[in-house]
Length: 44
Image 1 (tube, rainbow, N blue to C red):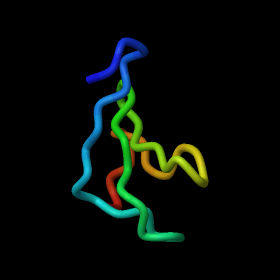
Image 2: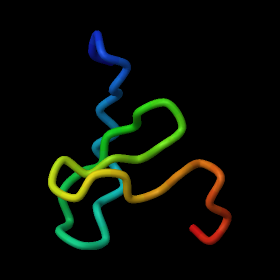
Image 3: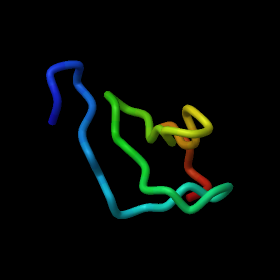
C-alpha cells in the first residue's frame, strides 16, 4: 500500500485495457480509465 491509500492489487484486470487494477478505499481503479468497479457493485 502506498502513502496515498492505493493498494496494488495486480489480480483483476481492467475490462477495457487488461491493465492490473489498484484498490483505493472501496474502489478498483485502472491507471488508464479511472474507477472501474466500486465495492458496492453486485454484478461482478
